[in-house]
Image (cartoon, rainbow, N blue to C red; front, side, top):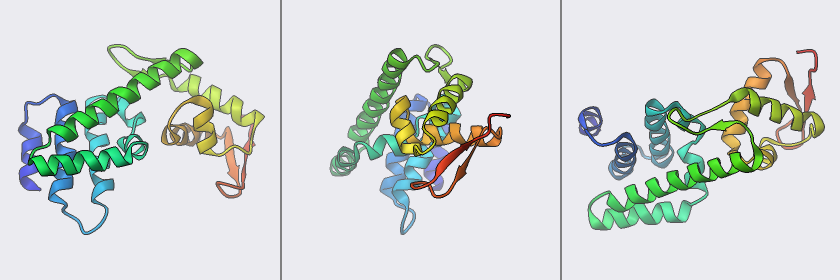
Length: 186
């Protein structure tokens, strides 16, 4: 692991490629008895978000969940070949597809995503949109909200956390059977 972290510090690879190689090598080393996949995906997201803040909103865990079989096949093929190229290509393609999907959803829904030199999300527009949906449908879960606004569930959960911090909403009851209490005075 020390060698991998040393490589990470000194590598001249582009951050997108470097994060993919690190992810693969972490999985290959398999330093823990359990949780290596989750840790590898968490590190991947962390490395990307350190490069561009935007990637904190596009977690690798969610991207992989949607392509789990292909993910494991890419790892196995890379293991067979003795190098990470197949896995890196898979991950770069997955990230590319997710970014295109996000851009297209912005064009369809006009939810305030700004893709340019400094890719980022205008939180207030998303907060306003989610607040409006929650106000009309307080029984919706984070998963259902993510579908409504074409974002990942994790992205929606982060925005919900901000709405809760601002005192605009609070959850009453369980995640699946509860509802959102709207605080219009906030």
